[in-house]
Image 1: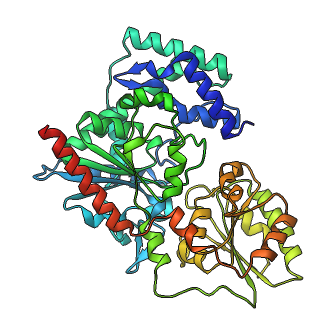
Image 2 (image 1 turned 90 degrees about the vertical axis):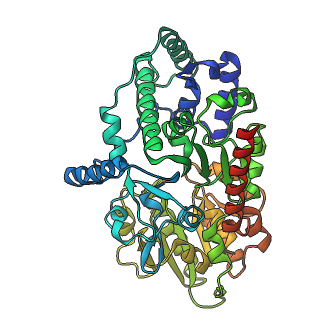
Image 3 (image 1 turned 180 degrees about the vertical axis):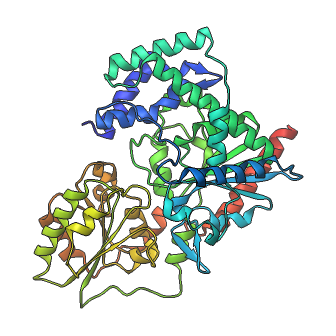
Length: 487
């Protein structure tokens, strides 16, 4: 299995050898639509990932029909004013405000817009069921989008496009030996992309949208391309961690001259200087990135109650799961607790991931009868940020929660399971621990428990004043747009 540094070098050589960004489909770089998927196929050494089918395992057929009808009725209403479309997902509604589920990523910023439309991608059943209890309810789901996409018709590829696809397909298969890259399969992916951007363009037109605010743009090429073809701006908020050589945003410098053919946001709002530092290693994003921080980190970092780390009593350890190697993780943690118990009592909380933990029973069965262990799903009574701040030590594999923990003053440790290498920057800087074995974790825990992560790390990973910074940057973006139009 290749790591991300090896893959970055491999892709860079491939892109320079064949100049693959030059192949266009309806004005968009074909390779840019495939690059993220190819990276993950190389990590796993298998075929290109197949885009997940829409919520067939999350919603019943009746529920999908009802949500689709609601969406279509909303879209046919004529609109008098320009609007901002926020595209979110179910699994980020993990916070609570006034007894309602709050979208930790977007809700704090929604007050910045007069005419707001919120569209939710349904990716988690438990949050979907609590739609009526959302702090800022959605007006649309993605059910209507998928229905329109299914019935949308697009033209076939031109002869030039077919020739380019055939050439690119051969290059990928000869260099990387991964499945899923045949001419037919690539043409199908491009057809899906064309339908997606056509429908997103239609939605932008119906809503009179002049701005889309979203996350995870590397999964939403159709959204960004469709918006841009309608003259709609796109701002993307950082959702997860940025790491050196990461496939999501680590575009190489040589791709800069093709940047206008890649579905990218006009602005990428980052958590902190660390994220900017990661992206600045390649001269690609330049003026499009802005550092704003995180409103949720601000809320917990600067709340009125200071959390005192325990100097006596049980040590509170939080493991934030990502659905990675669950069986091996359970064995690792059980061995660690056997080592740790003679020194200090321990309380272990395992927080399940809202999107990636498909088999929570592995954790529950692994610790059955152990009163020291609490398994908490993503809809636990306590916010994950509250759990992080209250913990004496945080553990995970390659989660954004490593950075969250440090920002909230809690030491963090990277566990050596698959994908841990993308967090190497953390322990190489000395900002976090790294444990290959339960003994490594035990030694680090004994040395660090009772200490707090330095305050300067908090500001490095998450800039303060996120809401104020967001409003300033959005206003600045619109000023620039107006001045460009006048010029």
